[in-house]
Amino acid sequence: MDVTNLHGRRASARWERTSVGDLFERGTWSEPDKEAIVAWEGAFADPSLQRVTYRQADETANRIANALLARGLQRGDCVVMFCDNSVEAYLWKFGVAKAGLTVVPINPMLAPDVIAYLIETTEPKFAIVDAVLWPRAQEGFERGGLTPDVTIEIGGGPVAGSTGFGAFIEGAGSTEPDVEIHGDDIWEIIFTSGTTAMPKGAMVSHTYSYLGAYSFALTLTRNLHIESELRLISFLPLIFHIADQIFSFPAFLAGGTLIMGRGPDPENIAAAITRERATALWGGSPAMLSDLVAVLDREPSSYDVRSLTTTIYGWTAAPPELIESLKRHCGEQLVPCEILGQTEAISSHRFWPDKWRETFLRTAPDLNYVGVPNPILAADVVDENMNSLRDTPGVVGEVVYRSPVVVAGYYKDEAATAEAFRGGWFHSGDLCEYDADGLRIMVDRSKDMVKSGGENVSSLRVEAVLRLHPQVLKAAVVGLPHDHWGEAVTAFVIASEGAVPNPEELIAFCRSRLAGFETPKHIELVTELPETVGGKVLKYKLRAQYADLLDGS
Image (cartoon, rainbow, N blue to C red; front, side, top):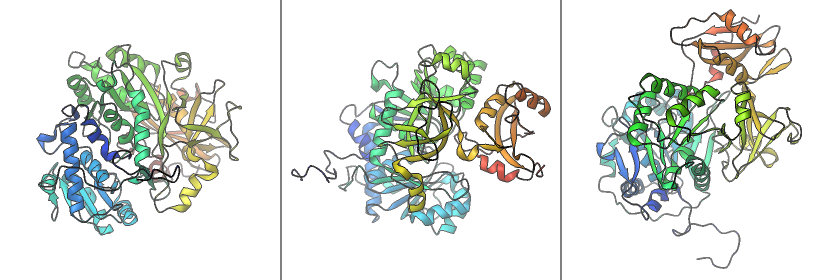
């Protein structure tokens, strides 16, 4: 017990430590029999885990931790997960944290060579997989020299040589393991999506997770009488995505309940909100919220979503008519909020259409306003010499961050870490500008800006205009090689149901709303776009697949 030094201390004692593994345990001292997690159909293997209390969640996570330690794993060892949303997988992450280990969730959509690279980089001592996902994992695991130790029996029995989840924790102790944990220990490595190189491992500490979650708990409890009434619903990825920090942990820090689905499905989301009386929704993108509204419009008598008080969305601006439609179904009490953040710095910028209503109605969705930083986030827009652009509205620069909710670095990649944190700030790669009132406007990701004829074109702005056309369901804009323009603004469009848009008419529609250099030079009609599970278009795949589309001319 160090009661002399006033600096250089590392809090690790049980009574003062910061540990993700303690989230459920803390809740047992207030309302142990309150439901901590409710799973929708498909998001559990064992029916007894469909609804778990804080006490049950904590005891199960303890069993996982004790079973892992009994296998000889030691502090700092990595544990790979190849899983999607389920109660078992979610509690597994907490068990790893309780054991003082480091969890490495792998995105099931990754290619075998990437999976093998992540395994080789992290040198895991243990692995857990979903039975239904094993066919996707097998080749990458074999290349990386890893075999699964435990299987979550969703979609099948245990993978050969592994143990089922229930059998693995059977007989393990349900009390907290006695391990040393510090708030700045890395409990999770989340690999960011690779574009021109292999993914980078963002190192997430316990403190990062706590403060990120608390910052969002404030937003997610808007319009609730008491914060513990929070019933947070997410059908988007929580196992292999940074969203777990801000769209699940806040439920427990507020003393509320997480409602979890296996994957995004608007009918099931509407049904779950109705049945479970959800109060806050992680809606993903405006396109996903539009899908939800379509379900509610189609069957208004089947659903009741008036319990919702908050919905959060990201990546692009929502059309005003979408927000109006959501409020028509949910009520005027609904507080919508757009965010801008990323794995490396998830305590985000926030834009409330209700707060800046005139600006929203005047500019959305053509301009993607992302508002101001969360109060614990220092964020500036700077030029290439790190000069602030705060006093020069309308000039595009890179967003940089300082915050306790910034990752410690990229695992085993000193060069990438030094580049990302040059000048004492985290460089996001996002391009924004200030408006005259100090609000930030998202222009594009730096790698997605199109350089056409000496001009910079925001792909997000062109996409927003295309989505205004009634025959366009989705659009993605990239720059493709062109002899004259350098890069030609090229749009890939998915048509609305039953529509057959004419590419030339779409180009004319854009020309009437955009500058000539911004207007697409070519529009390609497609039936699908390469996307993440969360709905982000993987533009690097479009650029690679269609590199020769225009044949340089």
